[in-house]
Amino acid sequence: MKFSYKILFCTIIVMAAAFGFSGYFFVDFVFRTSLEREVSLAMDESSILQFAFETAALNVPSQYDILPDRTVEQIGSRLESSRQEGGRLLRLSDENRQILFESSGYTKDVTLLTSIEEGSRTWQVIPLEGRYYVQTGSCIYTLDRVLYLETMHDVTTVFEERALGFAVYRRVTVTILIISSVLMSVLSFWLTRPIRLLTRATRKMAEGEYGYRARQISNDELGQLTRDYNKMAAALEENIHKLENEIQSREEFIAAFAHELKTPLTAIIGYADLLRSRKLNEEKQFVSASYIYSEGKRLEAMSFRLLDIIVTKKEEIQLQQVSVEDIFTYLESMFAENGYLIRVQYEPGTVNAEVNLIKSVLLNLVDNACKASEPGSVIEINGYYDEEGYRFEVRDYGEGIPEEELERITEAFYMVDKSRSRSRNGAGLGLALCVEILRLHGSSLEIESALGEGTRMSFILG
Image (tube, rainbow, N blue to C red):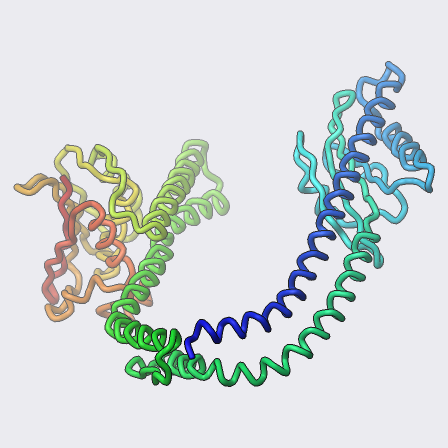
């Protein structure tokens, strides 16, 4: 028998269950419609109260330039008691969202009050002591004051009607399911055997047995599905390792981004601590604050740019002509007092780059050079033109990198000396991020090193 015939029999049974679902959606639709109507009424009532308040405020004696809080309370009390069927629930707050008048029994929750914006109206449904209310919020502008008006409109009846509708829906659905389950129990075992075999194959693959294949037991549509599934499994087995590597690379790059936040945050915290712990003259205070501001702005710009690169997988960035003098001046200021002898030499010129990302590359390279050297050692930062373009170079005379490690040094999380790197807050992520940034600039990181002689890292920009 073809699978289409099987589907026909199943559809007849499923229609019974569909009747129950349709009842649910019908009850829910009626509930939402009723609730929207009550919300509309609550908003209309709020508008009326707002108008009534503004009208009452206009009748305040003219000697008041600004509406007094006491008058606000009096107007609120009159508005509360003006409804014939027993009063309203409302709350009035001042410009600072401090409550001036509140009806007895009004909710103590101020979530809606804090979310009201000038020129806007908002609402929410809240439960209170076993009942439900539509709470509205709006602004009142009167006598040079901005006040906040909140009201509560009882909609418990709407929720009670929904509960009654669901109760009827459940009784009808249970009756239909009891009848249909008898038939479905017989049909499902017969119909779903191929599906169970496919499920078993899927579970095996989820457990890592990528060579497992589903057994085909029919020649109908489910048989065709089994054949297609096995073809898909073969393709999946072939590509699964590539996918795992891609996911791992993405996770490592995100981790590298988190590592990159360290340098500007260190500068911000350092200068902030200097302002906090020492009494500085006005000039030093201004310099420290300027560093905090510039590093914060750089951190913000870099974060947005790197997140854009990570999330959207862009293969290009916005490049601009940048003066190398600005870059090297920035590096001199960042490493001026770090315990190392920083020597900066460069030829004037311009490069085509995204300046914040290139600063991040150089900061990482200098930071790595410091970690590989003893305090007081010389760190050279050079910039000059060669045949290929403008070369940035960072050189240290520290412990160097073994030749067999050079090919892996730019891998994320890889550290030549793990104990030394960790003792200096290293995570093996800086160079991985540098390589990615330089790739976006059409460049690459060149590394030359020898044990006991130091390391030279450089790259070229056009």
